[in-house]
Image (cartoon, rainbow, N blue to C red):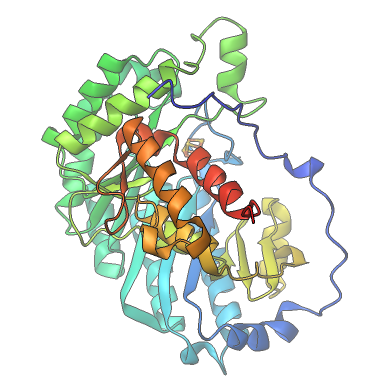
Length: 435
Ligand code: SF4
């Protein structure tokens, strides 16, 4: 687990101000380009993304905090969302019925801070204005605090079928350090009440938190497995964002440092083994589930350049080769919606990546299902040396299964190193074959 490769230092993506500025947009207004751009992607999946950039308070580890939830924010923001949805649908009125929506996702921020009837009206409005597929995944993301069973039931009645809760950790002391208010038992009770609505309930779980030991993480996984009825979870490594409250607290000595490699690898291993023991199936790189109905469709499509119409302030999306970002500043967002404009802060050329072919594509497809490509999918010239490499990785405890079988699976250690292994396989495939 800790000896297969040397740890690579991960660098954080550049912050907004440091990114290269895109060329100025000359392609007209949303009303002018959207109908044609919408139709151009008919063969691709379609998503609607609604951003709710308000939080009760700033969790220490989080880079996504923008606005604090104020007392009357829900009604005001809902009125803006309803107008934006209706105005967007008006722009697309001649074409909207020609594509079915596969995914609706409410992200944030904390969408679950919206009042019960407000969120229900936004969900219904999307169903009224767009052609939503009968098996669409409709997710509301949020947190335990402020999310009641009554809200959950009302939102399921309106059309939601999945709740994604940022639990992050179950241990009560650790949760408090992260700025999470509910105790383990309170959080667990909310998850179970939400599961009783019939929706699929999924959580985020972090490893590599300051002060998180293997014992704490194992007990968290045991509690989640045995005491909650969640359908799935996403397991993430904590990434420290520059300037986050967490980084400042660690610098001031108020929090222990975050675990480094190899402790971090051991934490991952503890979570991995205990999730499997707890009945979870590791079905895509970050996602674990206990029922096959849990698809994690939004996460998959979001990584595939899916057409995604953004709504709300600080939302991102695209229509074909046009990148769309709504105004981040709530005042600008409000003014644009009130003027009847699509509230776009930025429109950019966003060319679609060239579709992969050959071994690159085989690698992507196999890694998405936690495997390496079967040896008969490798280029002829690489099969012999590839078999030797796979056998070596099996001997090192990184892969399991038959080298000549239908694609070897990663072991726990192998999955921890899977990004590195993929990089090596790409380099291996790109090397010229000796004559
Ligand atoms: S973790 Fe969620 S609730 Fe906490 S600050 Fe970030 S977006 Fe807001």
